[in-house]
Image (cartoon, rainbow over all chains, first blue to last red; front, side):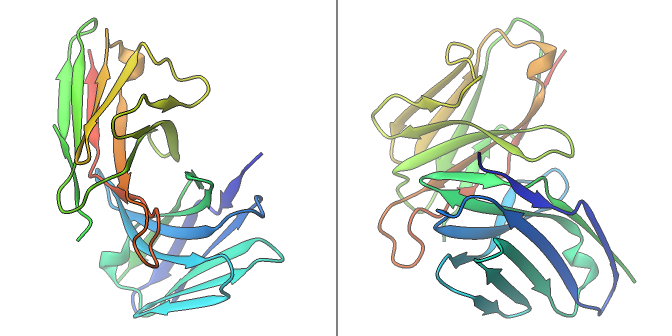
Length: 109
Length: 119
């Protein structure tokens, strides 16, 4: 079945780059997404990538997709304390979104 | 654009009562709305998918008589937790999507969530 795996925690210092990794299993995924969730809040769509793309850059965010290895990563450049949150990777299979368990990013000043 | 609201944001109720949660797409017409449940420090679990004007499709293991979903219009879906019990306490999040938007087809936009506590 479908499964999305992420590491649970990442800790970085302010100003450094953060890289959050994700692996998925369903090769029929059409889109892959990164969502951000702050405490007690819903999910905010950060960025997405179509499955036939390798890379997408959007300001401080860079998404890399290795479709052969089913590996997705999100790089946040110049990480700020306001970036501290849980980041969810999700793959779209049909109309459903399959989420990972989320990576908690902690940014220290 | 693509703003989704939920109401209420937080509700406490007694065991045995029913609670209705609303999900609205504020600046677009949502052809499909989704309801998720999230346990503390866990991922989102899809409960059901609903299209406007038709019955919701429930995921395996989700009781349709317990979690009533109504999608009466293109901007409003409701989730009613009937005869709530403490084990129903959770964070409920809805999302909405529309078909055909160039480059963003069927992307889901999420509401801020509703925290339900059943005493």
